[in-house]
Image (cartoon, rainbow, N blue to C red; front, side, top):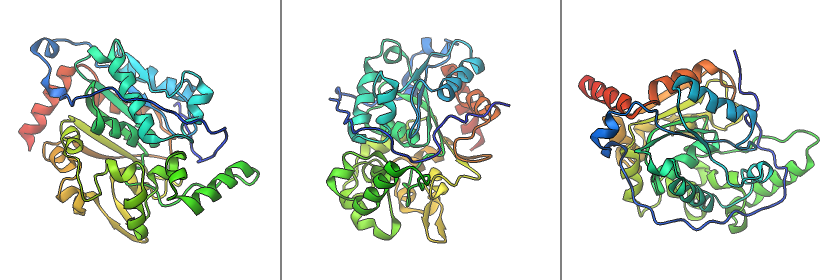
Length: 333
């Protein structure tokens, strides 16, 4: 039973600063459910987009094996690995350093210009750790090509309240983490250090709402809401959120389900204003049966092949497969 052990498990910093800049192309929301009758008759699997996590790279063996599993589950699947640079080393650096808003804009432009993805009726997507909330930002902000099913594993949808401790001998990491802890809300940190841009402390929400460069926006937590974000999430067929049962890397692990953790008090998503007021479309998606809460055994990003194959089998594949499942779900509601 293979385990993807090469996916990132520690928030370590090990590269020089390399800002990533991109100018987003004009985008318009497209619904995955708006495809033609011809598309419904096509048994070709939808393309799969994969966004890796912190400290990883698009060419890493673990990420490539995920793509191989997607193709094995649905033969003929075209797999696209999100990258912020064609150099694997620079792509890894960009998981630590960069402006996430600009990084998402770059991915929006890359996918919209891709000769295969841009002509597909829709795509499926899977994000690992921070790649999960970044793919959600893609759905909210551009979504062209549109995502049908979004799977996230161990992601930080409601932010993190702490950074993983560095190893004893990693002084570069320790120095960077000290900078993050002491200067999380500075404009320099918020525009350059990736993990800081999804930091969220429930005991200091005023600072978060004022200075957060990324998460406060895509969670629509500020007074002025972006209705497009909610509309695009609601158009998904499925948003499947996996939390690792023994995750000690992501603090708190419940962030993967949008739960609010304040000390020992845990507020589930459906009891929060962001759900009842439907800030990002999760309630609308839930009401049509598309919001899924799942657990995966083990530690952060230690994923067994069987878990991935089951997920890909249920939520990925030809476009008409999803349409049939959605009709069945609607009948059951």
